Image (tube, rainbow, N blue to C red; front, side):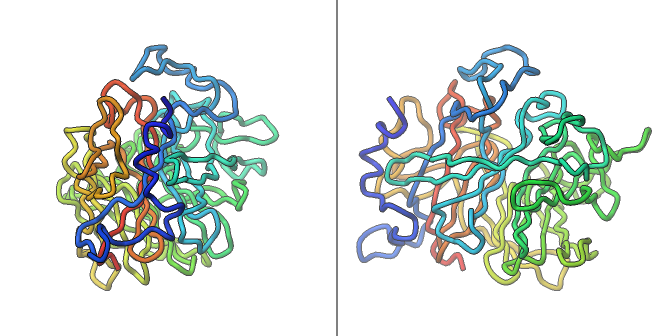
Length: 405
């Protein structure tokens, strides 16, 4: 049975698009709790055109899936932005997976892309309309890449671990990478425009091409720019380290940097966001309005073991230390309309209280009013937080958050 078929009863009452969904949990009664308005799923094995991938993975079946894969999988979304600048409807999106299979040494056959998608909350499906390929035909990347001697020089998951995405005022795309960590600037078609920009304070990960022999990395592996917000006018970027630096005595600190797009450099201004536990990470961030940000704070668990998946609002003020206000517990979302039901066999976290118990909650996008879109990276095929033994799908949910703004 398809995802659409098993959910048709539930989605029948959901309006066609987010912009027309009511912001009440019951007629005439405003909800004081975050409420699920829409849910759309992209099947884990919805392979896209491209070369066979996963050839560097062990040929072992994981959650019902055995590599190699017949094409390019979409291993969830690490970043979601509007397909068109300024559009806050959530109808058409540009959604970006990460480096593919989680490591530099196993992702050389995974092509770095961002996909044009349309979540359809009437059917519960996600339509994939195409993609743009990140590539370096003008040889701006100063270190060797997998497709070094080809004309297009398509970038792969062995070259960069792309985790966050923003569009600037000119329409260029900026990618937050974890291997450097770097900021990578491309044009609107995905072509690299300049050499990747390293951290201004010299921070490097163990995978950094800039790491000198014997040099000690100060950014842990896979703790680079998982999150990046962009100012509403498109002239400031706010990349955020996912985890603490190894040399930071406060392991709860997550550094927020400021980058000036016009001057093409970091401003030197930083802020400190403190997570509730040293093991928690910042999964994504977006500007709500002015200097207010909404961030994902999460643990690294999935399924019933999940304990912390939050949306937190903060403000970039004069003080270094950022205040915080939790606005959504993603493990406690009201679903009075049955958007998430009927449940699939063995499905966890659906029903009157909807949970988003997926390990890598990595995309947040404010929509009109108090609505927010959230999506996951499914670490294909390793996660099974929704149905044990079954590779997690990519889920996009829309939540009404009373008092968000």
